[in-house]
Image (cartoon, rainbow over all chains, first blue to last red):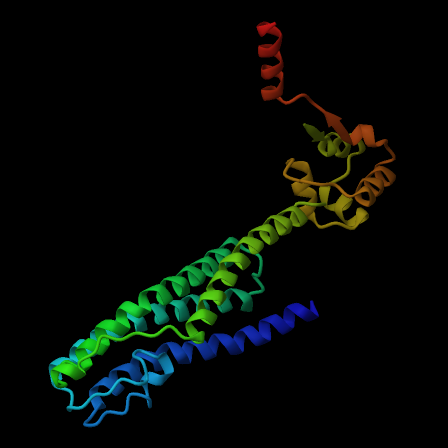
Length: 184
Length: 81
């Protein structure tokens, strides 16, 4: 019971943390794109999500159209992150109720794992599109279509695979729990 | 399949489920799981406690009945021969 209380307590903290992140991400996304100015420093905001390679050079102030397109393209990645955070909120909500080995938990683990996997496979496409949109006004020879695949991406891919594996282990845990519940 | 004849024994000894559950140290819910055949396992300590309280043998509580599906399969096998 002591461990269960610890799980409930820490899950509550994570629940509120992810709720805050869930609200903060779209707000900062909208604010950043709307306030992106001349000689834009991509590293200040985009660095967090690595939307484009950090070496990208924007030589002209972005037009409204470029900003809007950029917002939409990076919005796809933001949407995926939001869904992952939403599932994390639901997961920690269940942990708060001491529901640990349930099929709902398994579903969330699986969904998060596959979403993270998908996001890393989709990321280069997003990066390429975004870099093209952002450098469209550059001189012809300085327009780029760029994407990178760093150790961060590899770490997220490994984390995604681990989440999927953990979901399979959780299925075993659910079966054990059901057997234990029906043992008199 | 194994059938648990607790209801029969309770009726014989004129004991209520609640009384038995309290006496052997399990919840009424668990006793209900046992009575309705939903239990996947029965601890020997629980069986021991039931037999001690009801003054009976494990065979009075537990009964093996051939599953109807298994019976049909056996009949099919015999007919095939």
